[in-house]
Image (cartoon, rainbow, N blue to C red; front, side, top):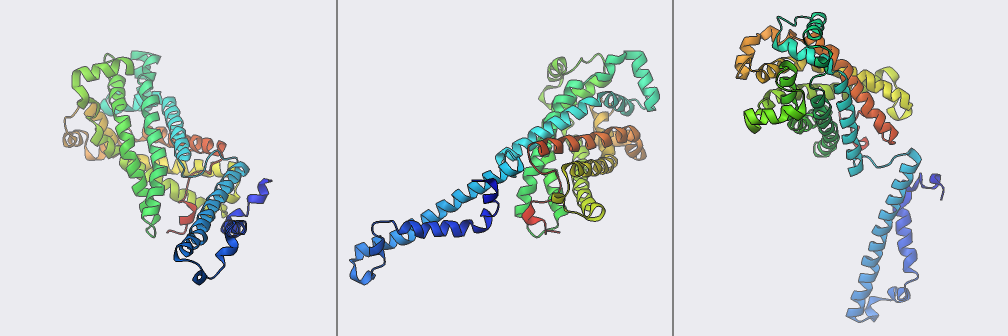
Length: 380
């Protein structure tokens, strides 16, 4: 069969299956008997005829319906170049791997900026600007110091990205089914928050080692010696000491980032391009992804900056509690300290993450990100 034969199967699959049911009944050896009046048959034989006519036929009908659906699904994947259907196990697997690769590689690329950011937060007097901070690090510790903690960036944020993007897609489908009729912003909020909770549990041990290694050159060179030393000195608690502040930083960021991205995608297609996503080329869809991704990163950075300063203060023992960290840093400095470098960091990183994430999805035949499942698009 040619692929085009199955394009319209979805409309007629139940008619086809029902017709097959009754066509097959014509070949059953007792079919002529089935049309006799039940009054001329024995009660037992009448029961048998009833079973044959209604149950066996219905079984054939259901079985054919499933068969036609499977044929339709396979042909649609072949025509679109998809390797799996949306919201299947394979789909969530692709989203997880895509998130892992996009987050891990982009965070690895900006390791020097992250090293400077952490040092500016912990020692703002010495590292008071981007230019002077880089000069001080280069002069005192050399070029290798700028890449300290790269392993934690690659593997830690890779694990976080896989959980964040993969679980976001899962929870978006889950909440779309559970919250039918509710505002779609609520679905985006609940999905991003649920995914980020698990993502930060995966990230936290790597983040604990990273911050210590970046600020204290004598602490260790990276994950290989940093993990054993942290466990020996602080135990398991040391790996998750900053989990609550990490949630405090990343949950607001994730909620704002995903929500801003979703609404930005919707706004661009509705008001700027004025076409449906399905009617745009893949290149246009990826351009929309980049624009929405940058907007999401910029807004999310400002919201999460206070918690980011608190995390760095706690990890480097500048404060023992969140309240003490807030008091030491100052309310205004919570929002302004290291904000320029975080904007320089997060904006391009989030844009790159969304671009790589959607590029991998496009290469596997899946649609770009943004929007609810198609049957729930009418939810406002």
